[in-house]
Image (cartoon, rainbow, N blue to C red; front, side):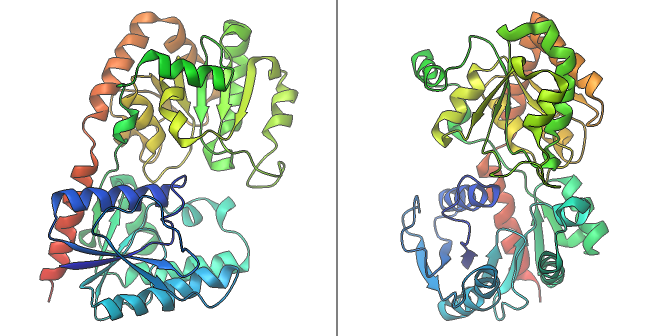
Amino acid sequence: MHVAFNGWFWNQPQVGSGQYIRNLMTALQKIAPDLVMTLVVPDFMTELEGVPENINIAHANTRFKGHLQKIWFEQKGYPGVVRQVGADIAHVPYWGAPLSSKPARLVTSVLDLIPLVLPEYRGGTGAKFYTSLVSATAKGSAHVITLSEASKADIVQHLDIPAEKITPTYLAADDRFHPTTSPHEDEVVRRKYDLPDEFVLYLGGFDIRKNVHNLLLAWTYVGPSLGQQVPLVLAGNQPKEWGTPRFPDLRKYAQELDIEQYLAWLGEIAEADKPALYRLAKAVVFPSRYEGFGLPPLEAMACGTPVIATNVSSIPEVTGDAAYLVPHDDSRQMGAAILAVVVQDDLHAHLANAGRGQATNFSWRKTAQKTLQVYQQVMEQP
């Protein structure tokens, strides 16, 4: 069997689609060494990082610049190379499949349905056209892979794809998130970012879906109780411009709430430093109101750090009973949960141990095995 992957996001390991394709192809190679895999990337991607050995590389013409470049690659360049290399299956590991991949059979990974579920992400005319296009292509797939039962339900509802054509394959935390390093290495990261002895961590994006504004509101209850000795550390790539519909001005909001003295804004974190950052935190808060999977809570749990998260979309599937879950729109409950986890040693220890155990239920090997089963099922179809 020969599978050709759309590699548009290969060189973007900081985004979910980039992490997904890298880890999936690496795991597939380990469990199915006879599987032939070709990574199809756009022609401008001349230097590729971290490609496993024995993976074929093919470049597709992109022709245009700007927004049309990606559409051309998805609809013309990539499927053209799929035909050239004679692949049996064309696997697009994000929501951007071609209208046709014949004679190869199309498998599409729909990681989430953010533009359809959340009105703030629908954008202008161009964005709506693209959403309509990829919605149509997903319906034409021989099979759709997604990341959770919650996302599967969204796909059935919003894309009208039969449930039997959709398979959830969970993600996993990388091995580097398991606590195998020495305390000295963590202390290097502490000094690098000038972190206090104790802190509560938020690590992620700052768009409105991430619900950080509700976390800040929760901190009006937490901050005066914990004081400046246990601040809320907000880490992640901040927008170039605050104060848009998608990126509300959180810094201004924090000032209005009069909690700036209890906060520390770190900015972007190096990928290599994230495991240590999780391990150093007293607790991790994940206030998001919609996730296709929700990898950060799983990464934090693998590191042995207690997690407070919201009980929406896929998050309860990921965390199970190993996190303190609260409603996404209830800042008072969120604040109470944070205080309980930080102050109550027995609860803190219980969540830390339960989180480690929950994280072991997920592995990229399992993800690859279920994906391989999808390939085999697709090849058996008439």
